[in-house]
Length: 78
Image 1 (cartoon, rainbow, N blue to C red):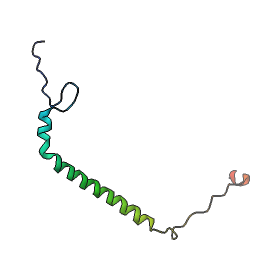
Image 2 (cartoon, helix red, strand yellow):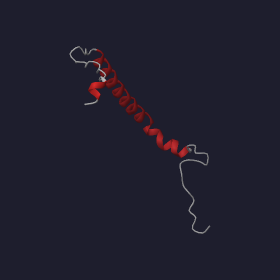
Image 3 (tube, helix red, strand yellow):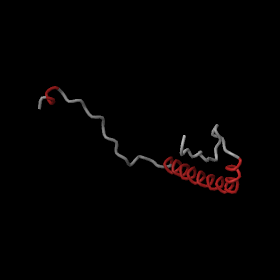
Image 4 (cartoon, rainbow, N blue to C red):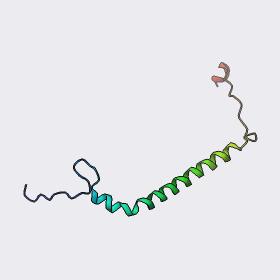
């Protein structure tokens, strides 16, 4: 194959991380984990607050419409 350029990758043939990729990612591992945990905690906190706030809401002021009545045959002809 003329002009074939071998593919350079941080992954081996079995798609596992190479030692070079592990070394390159090591300085960011703790920072990324902390940021990920912070974002997850924020999202879970908003969810919990929303569920708590909705649980306290009373829907007594909301008017529920009556069940619609079935039209009689004479009304259906109109």
